[in-house]
Amino acid sequence: MKNIPQVNEKVLELVQTVAKEPAVADALKLIADQTEIAMQEQIELCEIEAPTFHEEKRAASVAERMKRYGLSNVHIDEIGNVIGVRKGSGNGPVLALGAHMDSVFPAGTDVKVRQEGNIYRAPGIGDNCSGLRAILQVLRALEAQKIETVGDIWFVGTVGEEGNGDIRGSKHLCANNKLDGFIAVDSTDVGRVLYGAVGSHRWRLSIDGPGGHSFAEFGKAPSAIHAVCRAGDKVADIQVPADPKTTFTIGTIKGGTTVNTIAAHCEVDVDIRSVSNEELLRVEAEILSAFEGAVKAENARWGVTDETKKLRLTKTQIGNRPGGMRPHDCPVLQAARSAQKVLGIELTNYGMSSTDANAPMSRNIPATCLCSGGKGIGAHTVNEYFVMEHTELGPQLIMLAALSLAGTKNTEPLL
Image (cartoon, rainbow, N blue to C red; front, side, top):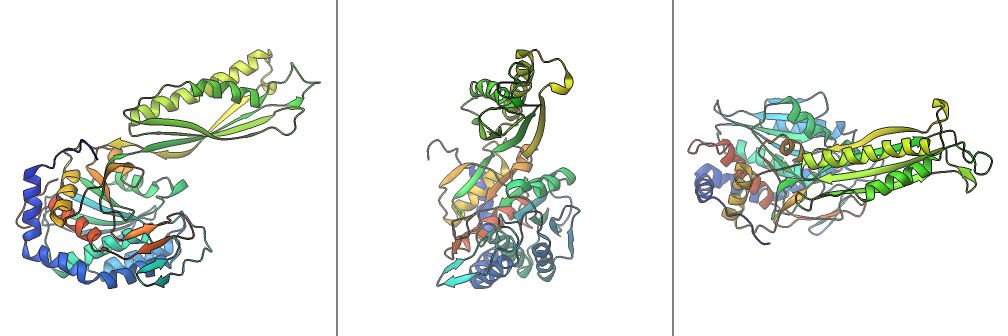
C-alpha cells in the first residue's frame, strides 16, 4: 500500500502505556489462553439460525451470555439489537463495539458445524459469528481482570446488517443514542482497518401503461420499454468523480410480454454507490430525474393526453446505506492502527467497505470496522468455513483500541 498516513506518535505512546498496565497485559494473555473456549462459543452461536429479520433466538443467546459474563445492564431494543452497557467511572465518552447477528441464509439452512482439525465448516461460521465471538471475548477479559474505564463501553449485537436488512440495526442504534465512538466487528482479517464507508442507494423503478397490439395500437399507446430505453440513454452519460469514488448501474431489467406487444410494464433495479453522501444524493437525483423525464417524453412522443392512457412511474427504494469517510487523524482510526503496531499486526488493508460502520461514519461519529481474527473463507455461501489460527489477535486488537478510546485509570480517553 502507498501513501498511508503516519500514526500519531502521541497516540501510539498512549496505546503502548495502556498495553503495559498489568491488568490489561493479563487480559491480553487471557484472551490468548481462552481461544478454545471462545471457539466453542462461536460454534454454539453459529448453530442458532439467524436469518436477516429473524435474529430473535440468536439475540436471546447473546443477551444471556452478556449477563452471564457480568453485565447487569442488558436489554434488547425495539428493533432487536442486543445492548449491554459496561459503565465507566463517569463523565467519559460512550464507545460502542458492535457485531451483527444476522446471516444471509434462509430459515431451514443446515447450520450444524463440522470440524476438521482447525477448520470449522458451516454457513455463517465466519460471517459473523466470529465477530460475536470476538466482542464477547473482550467482555470476558475486561470482567475477569476487573479493568475500569473512564467512559462507558457498549457491547452490541446488531440486527439486519446483511442484504435487505440495510444495516437497520446500526442505523437505529446511531439515530437513537448519543455515541462518541463506534467499532464495528465484521470479517476476519486483522490487517484491515476501514476509514471509509461505501454508501449505497438502490431503487426499483417501474413504468406502467395500457400497452397494446404492436400494429393495431401503434401511435396510440406509449411503450414502457421504450421509456426505460430513453432513461437508460440518459443514465449512461451521467458523469461521476473518481474521487470520491462514485458508481452507478442499472443492474436488472424486466418487462414486456411478447414480441408483437407494446409493453405495458417494464422495471429496472438501479444501484448507486459512493463514499460521499453528497455525491450519492446527486447521482440519485439525476437518475430519478432521467426516468421521470423519459416517461414524459414517451407520453409526448405519441401525443397522449388522457391520464388513464399515460405511462406512469413508480419509484420504490429497496436499499439505503449511507456513506461517509473519516479523516486519517480520527481517534478511532489512530487507536486501531496504534493497537495493530503494539500487537505486531501489519496493516494490509486500509480502505473502504460497506459494514455496520456506515451508519456512524455517515453521522460523523468517530468509527471504523475491525476484524475478529482467524480466517474466514467462502462467506455468503453454504460452503463457508473458518480456520482457527491467530484468532486471539482480533479481540486483543479490539480491546486495546477500545481501552485507549474509553480511557483507563492511568490514561485519559482518546475520544
